[in-house]
Image (tube, rainbow, N blue to C red; front, side, top):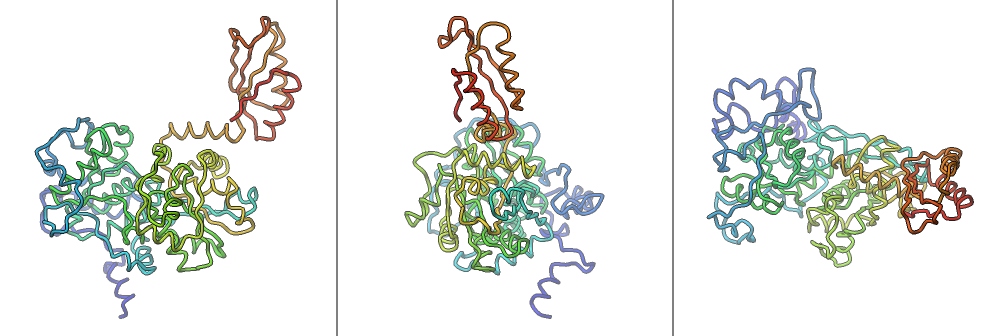
Length: 534
């Protein structure tokens, strides 16, 4: 029996079903995992949740119902206060402790580490990162993670190129980060899987850890600051994680997470550019290559650790060196562009970016190894303005009938902004990486994008203060097929004549052509027209 057959056979049971990843229930009793009675009484139920199946059959992307955390209440003693358990999240101020906190944040020493020291995710030596690692990751996660579609976009004719959208935002947690996280978690030793993992950031990476760790029956703890929205905390609990509210800032929660990892030998996970994580992310490049034949170029977001860009480029360049890989990043956060100019990763910017809007595109900072891979394999880096990204989000809603965040829309924004004219007439794949943005912020972005795309306009005119003038203005708007959204009379305005009133209108038009036509008609009829530019 050759090696490939042995490897394939070892991952399957005698009955032909895939072998469950994680530790079995027949192993030695662990009081931190589950009580003996609970374990025996809920074995069948636990097995169904672990295998990712529901009553009606297999669900390849996770069960849709609420998954209770597999952490026994006894484990609460590791964290001190009982109020930190799941349920009603209580906020606490950061308190000083007797523990030597500088040891948690100090740089690692060269001395031999003790068993009680904080553990970090195991890293394969990056110099040995090969395409075979990406291929192995694809084989290992294929039975758990769904293959997302890569569909032809209706925007193709408008921009003169064949655009295919790789919709990674359709994953269970709405992010491509699930690929790297799943492979990272399944690569852990069984001893560490039984102990558990800790994350302390509100990000796509942490959501993927919470979801897949629960599916693999790995205890997962999420440390969040007290200022976190309740909806975000509830989401992590629904994924099956134990949520601990600590501190007032993300720095406080991360510091506390490292402290807990050190004291209890848990694994503190944070997004980095390790070879295992990059191999998992690189599997999306393999899928794009399989789904779009005769591909000319791939556009990938270049934010955060740059791991997605580096892993995707490594896969594509191995399969076909002729495929160009283009990275896109925000114009007010050009970390990769600045790093290429300086020939080393730039960790911070002089102007802090809008983290609320960009999220994972600016946090965490650029990784050293991912930078070296991107520098070697990526053909071009472009930066786009915030206005272009917002308009791209609007186009996704109009043409693709889907809502994505700024990271998911940034690749399409580079095409809309006219920065990739060399791709006209070619087959282009755009990686839509995520769709995790609060609904309130999405609404603000769309409202702003409507103005930027000249679909919503604001203007003011002076009307006579007698009956009939307002009706004439409304009649003009009706003839031009314009929808009136808002109108306001400013009678106490020093800019108006004594017997005239200032009227401000907000109108919605079909496109910028109709907007320009309305402006021309109104300027002929009302010399006092004041059109508010965007």
